[in-house]
Image (tube, rainbow, N blue to C red; front, side, top):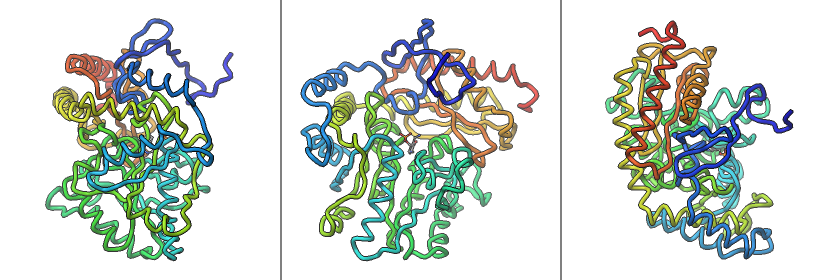
Length: 445
Ligand code: PMP
């Protein structure tokens, strides 16, 4: 008998016993290679001493104070470190929250407030892309172009997502880069003109699309064009770096691959690296200025926001990333992993695309050519389940049109060694062989 509500109530889940480095162990003694850092979260791997020591030390001093009564050294230092490490010369202010969904909700609110404080109260829509994921709360889900996660709640959602993603593998116009001239980015301008810039506060995008697209990576020049459109129409640009931030893609921030800086940034997942629930919304000095000169209040927040315990953990995580050069490592080892995945693609014709940057890599499956795997086959589920049986954790993702289409994300901890990448690839190959054996009729070639 169980009273715990788990994601799938009809399934049985292994019970975790412990985890160390890139491995997780269950109570039956089975070992799993964490090929996706849980949910692209455990970026340092498990059981890092420095983080546990910081956590212990802070817990002994003070774990919780309410943010409207006290600030803390840990939270102040974390905000300063974030601005220095990700600002590229721009100052960012940090608002601490507890999950990625809260971070994008807060980003929405700050964007709307930025315009309100300047007397432009009509600017309160946020545009986003179809095939995107920004969180599960109603506001964040309204921003998300993720059909499966929206389906049950559509009547409660604002109708926000508007433009196509930069999905070169399935270009909606049938074009190819660079002759496409970023037609998909220009959709933003069309949408702004249609809706009216006077109604729009911001545009939000994941630099590389994660859960809704398995590491859909835009071609160079895309974000420069998007940012230019935002600037010309007086619209803020929010980067949802919950999955891509803090080294995951081989740069400190996902957007650092391109020559653009966001006005507002959402961080989560890798900020606490799974050691604690913590996330953050960062706003540039430019965004903060009218709020500082106006009401001086950010109308958002949660009871546990900015608690010293979580802040101290995130600070230790940031220091660890810097001290162990994990950003560079993610780039190098990610390049190695990418090549290995491309080799697998040559062996299995139903691997349609391998994409991503650093250690955020996606594999999209096809029936043949570019034909989407029909959703009723639950193919992604099958791959994830077989992988877990083989002792490998991979992350399910949507792809195709968000309903049909199957994909997984491979995103091991940034601390993974080269020999462990080989082990991951070996387990993945075994998984694919078994999947092929189980459904020969579906995969045409
Ligand atoms: N934004 C992005 C880009 C994400 O990948 C996620 C989580 N998958 C979220 C927001 C929501 O974060 P959380 O699950 O911590 O609420």
